[in-house]
Length: 360
Image 1: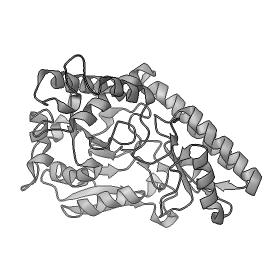
Image 2: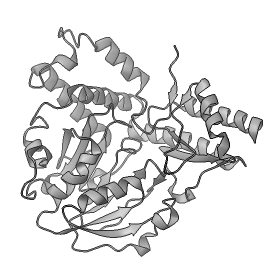
Image 3: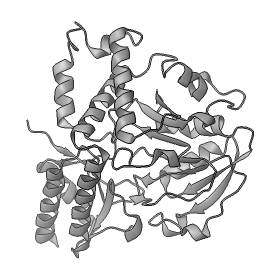
Image 4: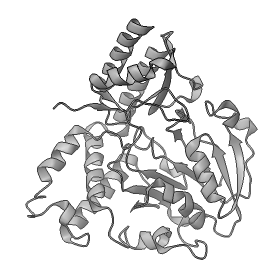
């Protein structure tokens, strides 16, 4: 059976080369006589896998030496709580920018631990745009500024960094990490769930500047204390070992593909193609403002929503799956993360043209 083009917002596709390598090593990794899934996380073999994965990630992202890289569990959603617990550091408020569903969840969780200053919100535009930075209400005494660079549901993305002065900038990069180069030194903390551009679900990356580690609020669980996790090299308890291993294979794959500079060219080309197909059609529409359209998640609607079911069914017959839009937005959504080959986007565009010719 041929593989399908999976446009899911997450878990997303994994590179085929990575899956094949994992398949070849599944039963016996490096003549160890066991699967990575069976290894002790304290053993020499697994420790080498973990260390190499971190080294490759630091290399591909150019992570400065004064940042710790934590390989944690609990998904990015667990960091909605961990971040205020660790970063308030004696302050009682934090700044949050609200650009969609994931921003709102982060805000709701942070509100349990501090006063949240809403810097700006895209709610009035139904989260189809990012408020003009000139209108932002930043608080000079905030512990940190949190934003979501890419909203997977609405397809809204920041294409420039928020200017926040000396206040630590915190970013939920779950759906945009590794898709292009970024200057890590501009951030106090970056976090990301793995299941879009890193690897399988179960792993969460936290990249945090050294000076922001320690001094968490009283009552912070040990598993959410960055100082404890950093001291234990992310092995305070048994980590998600197989997800960590697969992430390491993805990091090597990225390096072979030309690093993040190479991925940026491919990702820009993929998204440009799909947006052009939508914009040049009278049948399809993308609701997001041109200056903040996502490279990774592209929602679109049909001229007649009664045809949504036919579109999804016929697309699936051609191996184009998981295109249904989020229930809060409707229509369709094509998530085209790093592992989505350009051929998959081309196949979707060709199908869209055929469908429009038939029903438009």
